[in-house]
Each structure stands twice: as C-alpha cells, then as structure tokens.
Image (cartoon, rainbow, N blue to C red; front, side):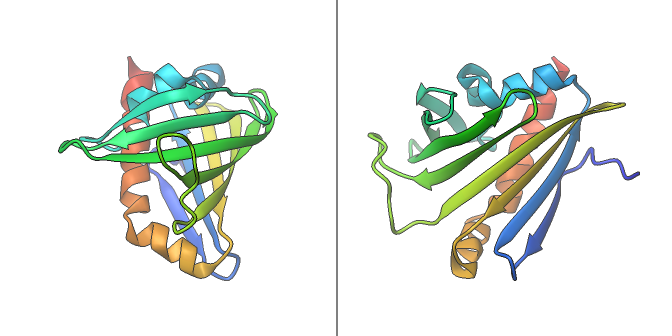
Length: 164
C-alpha cells in the first residue's frame, strides 16, 4: 500500500476529472472538522501568502460556503461552494464556482464538481477528492491558474494545522 503524505494529483482528460489523494496523521474526526468548519477552513484553505476568509457558511445539504482568498497585495478572489450531499464523517459533494462578494456566480469562469471521501486508516485519515468539469477547456483553465500548486500548498497548511 502506498503512503500518501504528499499530495497525489492525477489528471484524466478523457473524463474531465482531477483525482487527488492525501493522507493526514490525524484522526478522522479532526480532519473532517478541518474541512467542514469555517474557522478551521480559514486557517488552511488558501496557499500562503494568501488567506481564506469566510463571509458565511452553512454546512448542510443545500447550504453554501461563501468566502474569498485574499492576496498579499489586497486582491480578493471570491468563491462559492454549494453543498449537495453530506454523509457525516464519510463524504460530501459540492459545486464550486467563482463569484462576487454577494455570491453571484461569474459564468466566465469554470465550475468544479467536488466529491470528497474521508476514510480512517491505520496512520490517520485518507482524503480522496475527485473534481469533475463540464469540459476539458474548463479543466485546463483551472490547471493553468495554478490549481495543482495551490491546492498542494493548502493541504500542506492543513498538515501544519493538524499537527498543532
């Protein structure tokens, strides 16, 4: 069995999907909370030196997380995550979209369909994330924006947070 203390991202262009696997040296309940509690998300979600800031979050099926990633020069990139399904401590699905500060979607930017699956393993917790896109062009746009590097850095932030 391979150990995934590093972020493993694979690209499936035929199916317009990113597959991400990562293991954390922390129990499932702590990892789940870090992914679903706005105060904890704000501490790790954005790659440094950026910071995530939640405007509102309602983690329930049909709920929404409205936040921005703020950059070192004061720039803000607003995003909205609409929660679709939640199976506590096991998985959740959501649609993520770029938006304005009121949550109005920017339809010029790609939408991402996220499925996050959490499982307890001997050394802690494994998180598997599949992100699907409506087109290869949208997937490429997210990759060109630095998704791989940014999400990897954010997951490293989560490692640091869980170690505390």
